[in-house]
Image 1 (tube, one colour):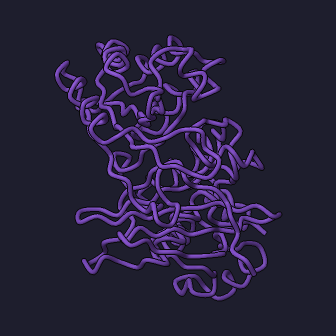
Image 2 (cartoon, one colour; image 1 turned 180 degrees about the vertical axis):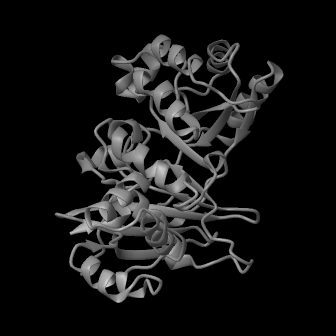
Length: 347
């Protein structure tokens, strides 16, 4: 069975061409799948019954299966999703007054083993398919409904900052972004989608050129020795290569690269670290998100004190670097940045 969540516009057109149908059928079906969030062909009432019956034998609309659904005290909502063959991922919805941000996963587990992230400690299982990535947005909108405003979906922004390294699953992620941003798909502006990478340098300029989405780089260190302790992939793509790749990114006017920096007490939070960060970012259109570390079981690190984070921000601002402190959400349900890891509830 072909999962319609796996297909872009060209794939849908090819499907109907094989059935001897006109290309406009692809647009009709994509409207049902991505706009009306239908989960079955029988509901597509503007298709003739014989065509619906033929499609029912060939295709399905199947998103991930919800294993558990938990809401934090601050309104953050986390789902554990079964993606088959004993694998599961987590996705997180963060409601705000002016937006609803969905943090989606791109892999089941992660092979990169960053020191500040719980996901890497469980190891890598497999890449998610395009349907499994798009399916998270499709499922969340079905679960959440609308905001109460006409035609306003609950999910307005998508960040690929969940489990896994998006650029290590390049083809499926790029196709998923195409589906999410296309007018015939979920019609989310590329300006409202952000992909986060720990620094697979050769793929960064290509991905941004092909998708036009926002880039967030997980930096977390200001020397190669320090960053290699925190982000092991730095041994393969050291800071010089990473920063060179960032300088090649085709940035649209008024666009910046976001650099994410987890604040770890006594590790990367000194004034000297802040000054080195200023030097690294010199000449780049950049902003820095300072992220308070969210502890998880077995971690060897501790969060920087709030006063130290504020001081670090002050050093950056005094040198003209735009810097904000990201407030943690969903800590009480292990849904905050760096805390995602599969733990199936007891039967």
